[in-house]
Image (cartoon, rainbow, N blue to C red; front, side, top):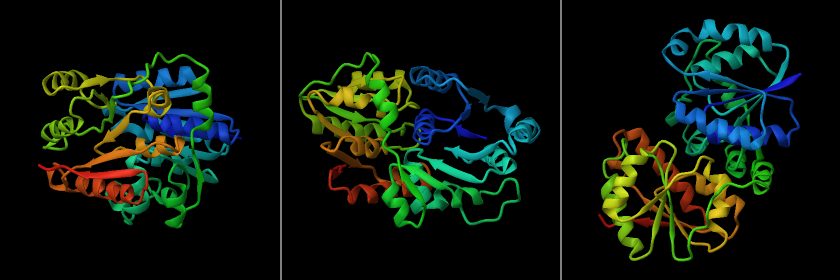
Amino acid sequence: MTALFIGQSPLQVLNLVEASRINGEDPLFLLAWNNQQTKDQIEILLKRLGVEDVRFLKIGPILRILYPLLLLPLAASLRGRVNRVYFGTYTSWASFLINLINAKEHVLVDDGQKTINILTAPHLVGLEKKWRPWPWSRTYVHQAELFTFYDELARACGRRARANRLDSVVSQLKQSSTGVQPAGPGDVLFIGTYLQNIYGLFESDLELVIKHAGERRLLYILHRRDDEEHMRMLGAQLGFDVAKFDLPLELVFNLLWSEHRPEVWTFGSTATDTIQAMLSELRVRVFQLAPDGFTRERTGQAFLSIYEQYAENERTDLVTLNR
């Protein structure tokens, strides 16, 4: 018997690798990608972590249309061999495959802010209580155990959960060189969130944040979906620096922060939940975005849900921008 690990982002992969080690599984990784940059980031991460038994799946027009035919042979080969499926995505193709495999156990790993919404506002993330025919049913998502940084929240919501603190992968990374230079003692680390195309006030709100920094250097840490060229141009215009890392922030943050412990700011990123769980002394300042500034009402509601969680965190300071 083996375990199947399904994911499609660097963060999901990071949590899947941790889960495979904590539970001593014999793992097979099925990792989907929709652009070369994402695949490159995942491959760099897997190489550093020494993960080899991996199958990549390209998400394109052919897969979106023909995935039942393309995935049926894989499901048949794994049915009866897989007793546990770990997953970070539950899109149609993933649900189709997972239901056909019919494993005894299912474990959901974190996927950033989506995890909070899965627990507190499932209708915002495609988990409405509506009927879907088998094998596209998402019943397994509602019944799955969670391997998560939000284990206390999950239990409060009536879900089975185990704590994830990335102990194994972080320990391994400390033994290898990453080339990450520590931030300076007077710097501000700003953890980016992908907002450029979904939040109309992004540039004006960012300019207000720069004013809060005053004469201090603000280092904007790119989200993996940020347009790097645009953000560097914006940095030159507004007066901030930009940093990009090939590894997920959770794996490099300690090297950035621990020597001089600069202030950490964000518009809202669940990466801060992860790094606060890993670093008990870390405080984070969160600048609240305007819900009506988003291009989609559902996205604004999702951020409100995140801010509600921040409000309950004693090591988080919520700040309202004076627009």
